[in-house]
Length: 496
Ligand SMILES: *Cc1c(COP(=O)(O)O)cnc(C)c1O
Image 1 (tube, helix red, strand yellow):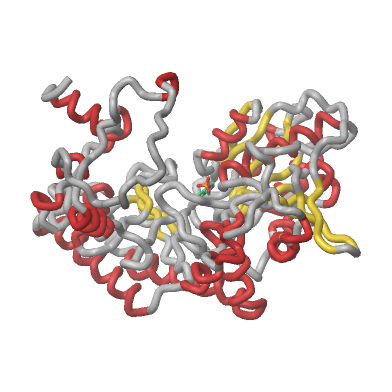
Image 2 (cartoon, rainbow, N blue to C red; image 1 turned 180 degrees about the vertical axis):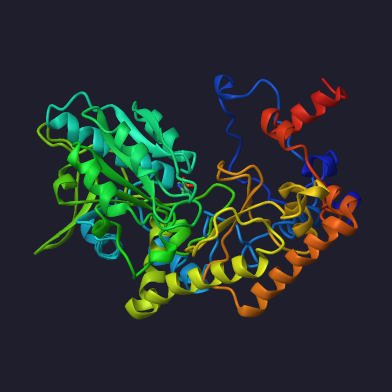
C-alpha cells in the first residue's frame, strides 16, 4: 500500500472544494435552519474525491486481521470461524427491516427465533430459562449478579455482599461484581492451576452472595472439584455463577447446570460463531435455574396458545431485575440470529464434535511445543493452555517479542500476559475449525521463533518488521490515547 498517496488519515487527503458527490439542482426552494440550531463554525470535514475515499478505506481494510485472513489463536476469546450462511441469514430484509415497536402479530417469526434459541441455550447449558437481553459477556455478568443480589434481598438476607472470584478469573468478573455494588474476595489457585478448595473453605460464610467460576478456567483446565465447590457454596447459602466464555470445549458434552451452577452467561460472539473483536456487537445471554426464573430481566419472549408474546416489567410485586438497557429491547437480534443459524446448521450430533476437536487441537499444539516453551502446568488441557514464555530464559527474549515476531509470519498473536498467574503468560486457543496443515504451520513457526531467539535475538526484539506499523508503545497508547484528528494536530503543536 502506498501510504503517501492514500494517506493514514482521510483528513490528510483533504483538498478544499473537492467533492465525492454531485446532487441534482435544488428545485424545492431554500429552507434555512433557525440560528439557535446552527453551529457557530462549520465542521471541519475532509473534502475528497470519490476514488480517493474508496481507495483510502479499501486499503485500510486490508490492514485488518481476522479469522477470515489467517490463524487467530487468541486464548479465552474463541476466535472461531463465522460461517457465511450466518451472515446471509442475518442480512435478510425480513429480519433487518423489522422494528421493535411493530405490532406483535407482525413479528411472530422474529419472536419465534428468540423463543427457540432461549430453549436451545437452556437445553445446551442445563438451565431452566434464558434471557437474551444482555449485549456482551460482561453485561451478562452484571445481569447475573443483579439476579443473585435480588434473590438474597427478596429473602430478607441482606448481609450477603461478597462475591468470591478465583485469582485466575477474567478481569470482567471482579469488575462486574464491583459495578453491582458487591465486594470481591479472591480465592487462590493451587499450583496445579485449579481453585484451592481449602482456601475457599476459609472464605465461606453468611456474608457470601455467591461465587463466580469459569470452567474450564482461563488456564484451559477443567475444575474437577466442581461438585464439592458447588456443595460448599450452596451449603453456606451462596449461589454459583458460571462465566460461560469457555463453554466451547464442553459443547454437547457437559452442562454447567448439571455441575451445580445457578446462573450462567454465554458469549454468543465466542462459542456460537458470530464475529467479534474490535468491541462488538456482542450478545451475552444469561441462564438461570428454576428458582431464579422470577428474577430474570424483562422484556422476555414467551409462548401461549395464541403464539409468541413479550412479557414486560412493571407490576410492583414482580421480582424481575427489570430492563437492563435503555429502550428495554430484546438484545442484539442479528447476533442472536447468527447464533441460532449456527446451532441449527450444526445440529445436535455435530455439536458434540466441537468440544472434542477444540480439545484435541489445543493438546496437540501444547505437546508439540512444550520442549521449546515453558509449560508451567503439564496436564491435559481443554480448549486452550498457557505457556510461561520460552523455555530457554537465558536469551532474555520475552513473550511480547515472540508475539510480535508471529505477526511477521502472518499469524495473529495468542493472548499474552493473561492470566496474571505467570509472568510471561502466552495463552493459545486454536479452536475446532483449523486444519491439521494450519496447525502444523503454526507449530513450525513457533519452533522457528524459538530458534531465532537463540541465533538472532535482535530480530525478535525489533519485531514486527513486515507490518504497516512497527512496535507501538502500548502504555502510551492506553494512557494517552489520541482519538481525534484535532487533538493529533494540537499535540504536534502545528495548529491551534
Ligand atoms: C471474553 C470474556 C469475558 C467477557 O465477555 P465480553 O463479551 O468481552 O464482555 C468474560 N470472561 C471470560 C473468561 C472471557 O473470555
